[in-house]
Length: 389
Image (cartoon, rainbow, N blue to C red):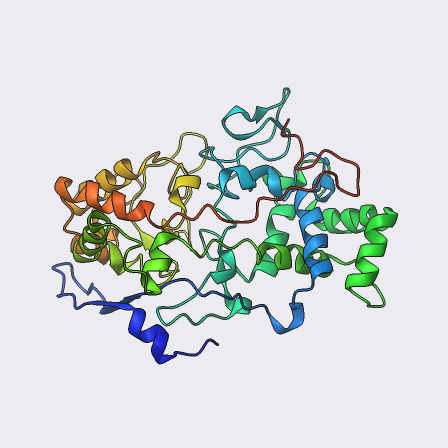
């Protein structure tokens, strides 16, 4: 765990909310202690997956190699590309049987594959997932996905590979896809040499080692020098007066109840009645079928539109208008009753006049200085990044 040094502590902005009891029976808004600080300048790796230059490079190649998908047409980078901040510009991603990139990506015909279930979150700064208001975090317990279904980047890597609509496709079952991928990797001399050097085990090519390599690469995808970070580290000229005003309004109106800490996320789930998407046949009921979803980070929002778990909101203004609506008692999802809304919703005091300054502040959380290197080729000889051309 990271230390709580007095120097960092002196740079934190303190903000605490004590919430009054709500009218709804048996529902009380919890006490929230909120602090803001710059993102850590260094990344913590799990003890059993310490980074090396070769491991990171192997992870980069695997991240861009569609050999990990059932039909050899989708790579991690197909939906998490550096040109879009390692996120996706579609509401819901098109994985298997897709062609093209970004807004031009579409299903090939014929097609029997559905859209992915949720909007692709950025991989940027996922190394810090779970970081608390004191800057402490454990990479082995880092919460992942909109529904918190796994912990750690190592475990996260494996989920899309076995998901039918993301990377597995229809030609392999969940039980078949991992052995198939291992067989493919073993058949490529360049990969065999990489794995033998990076993982000097009796059996170096395993799904566990594939996930370790990709996770090691993903921990290098850090954007922790936004103007807000510089401001919190002591450069008081890094933010304009209007951005500082927006920061204060952001805290005062209640946004900070959930969006706090270095990542501007409490990494908890909340029910907020986001409008459903017509691209899914069944409503997405989220965490434990409660229609709750994890609080997303607010960092690098310029790269991660459209927003929310299903990409239904397309701009920061639209998001703030949505919150103004639900704080006023409206629900935007017919599957969610007003009584089910998170208690923090009633704590929001957002007005139209607040929106401009808050948006100005949120833009100060962008950091464009992150690793955008794309390999010229991958060992499989397949198209780099999958079928995105």
